[in-house]
Length: 240
Image: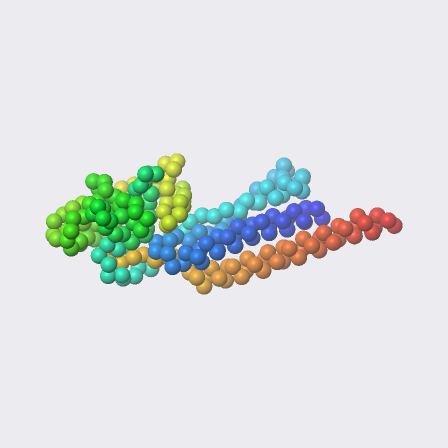
């Protein structure tokens, strides 16, 4: 019976993690380049964690992973909006180092630098990209020209193990331990005047949120039932 209470507790704790993931996905369903997180539940069962009821809580580990499948591409008609077709990430940099993103909503700052919405510098093959005044055009291979004069080429990278990347906010990813295996991507196809939208399916996330809520309620009721039964065994049957 004690094990049943801890099993219900582990299920409720996993439900909280799953609900947090779903809520974050829904909140970013309209964020360009956002990649949804998925819930994963791992259970490690051995003699060490089944002999003691409390260790059942540690035997169940709830976590998340990122789904990198592409989102829909929509036209914005802005000359400094770019969408990647297929794999790859744009590279941006600031004082903290380099980050990687699928959000190609860029702009030209007061110094002429190509930057993202937070002021991070977009990286080209030669480093920071400086755009002089003029009409910007970008080829499918990422070559940037202003009034027909070639300026640089957008740097696009991919990773042999993208699941090793870590989300750092603002649609950015980082590889702090250099475990993802960065690769240069020379064959990237870039569309100017388009943005990749979030790959979140809002309807599916709402269904998952409802299912998680019901599972949490069921686990909670089961825990209360077992607690009531245990109370009866200890306080009532013991008196007979």
